[in-house]
Image (tube, rainbow, N blue to C red; front, side, top):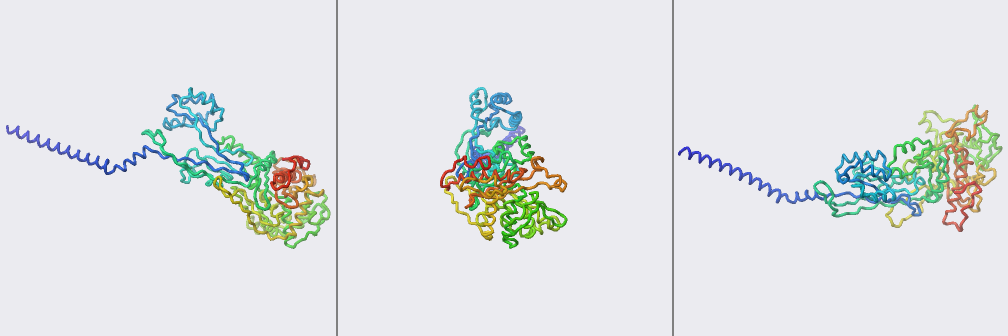
Length: 627
């Protein structure tokens, strides 16, 4: 009996301990539940909503790029793309085969899609093909019942309607590289594009705009259930250029077939009306995704289609530089317009001979005739008297040897040599013979077509240091744009010296002895003036000169001279200048001057301030080709 009582007490004690333990655990559980559901309820409600509601960034529409008349040069267009949802397609590989029978689908695209299928969740759409045409969209939609999981989505894409015509100026957009990530969440969107060159790159932030956001409800697997709200972003701002696209296209067409560059500029405002480089490229291909083969072809082309030769091509200016030498001599009091030199075809300096381009020489010439006939011997003499440092100082005042601040990446400064520059750079003193070579725009002298256009503008606008501009400040779409007349400083050169140079450039084009006489504009009131230049790319040896210099057309392309011409119009009241450089084109008078003739005639015919219309067929006889 006593043993049973002891066992009952032991059992009761153990039961009480067990019940107490359960009660304690239950109390902890209740307390924890109270803490989670009451004390921390707001926090966990917020976390639940964050898991249920996703905030997705929406890219804004990119701003347009327009010419001076509002013609769109870069716009946004709808991008129709085919996507496949793997969980809805029973066999993705078979589905891709079916799509390939309807629209072109490269093997690389199929492998990419199959690779993404293995990495992404089954409900995530995968892009199969982008930039589908209406016909391709129709074929897929008609066959939709036989393409499970395939659908057409509409996105946005950058489009350049004029393709190569303005590619070097407008530039292009392309996908963001890892090195270009700055923390801006827009840049991390898979289909986002940023400016990579040209105006697209310079004004990328203004064109880009600010992103919007979309609130969507998702289930536990991350699948979108519905959209709860949407906040639109701020569209990118439009950028207005100084280009006249109709003129730009005409200039580009005139350069077609050459490796060349041309710049057309207003001499008073500095507005660049056309800036063309040939050959060009289609910027749309970079937006769509350039193939490796196309990229290699662009890089290996000896005519360098990716380079904007108007600002990055550096060429010896040849005889166009004689204007600088003449102005330096006049302003320095070294020689006046009556200074005469006898050209016998060559000049001696020590034991060296420097030859004129005209075998047998030009005879006795004063300054205007020396420029008109482009006599090398005359300018050998003038350069020797003036000195290289004085020539260099005038060249810089005219815009050479320095970047001009045009709103484009890749601008090159050119080269205007001095005594100190050579000693510091090459470690050797300047030689007198190098001054003579500099006097005809050869040797170390390098210029860009844009610099040559600016030089001519400053010579014919009364000595005003006009600065080129290509774009105006970006503004909101539809906002009125203030476009004040820019104010420029004076060069501080005498009007008499400038008048002498204009008289000479008039003779270059409009006098029978002028080097560009055959390229003159014969229409009344539209005549042009200018200066020819032929820039050698190789040294002519003494033995070759004795045997007879090989003609340009008989040399390999890369050994031919560059053809250069700078001109202005109209003759009596200059308003426009044009600079043309044709790489390995031969003579400036025979190749570059006729191109400048057509350009300057075209820009004058398009001038809205003209009193009356001129027949678009006028002027074809002078240069033999109309724009």
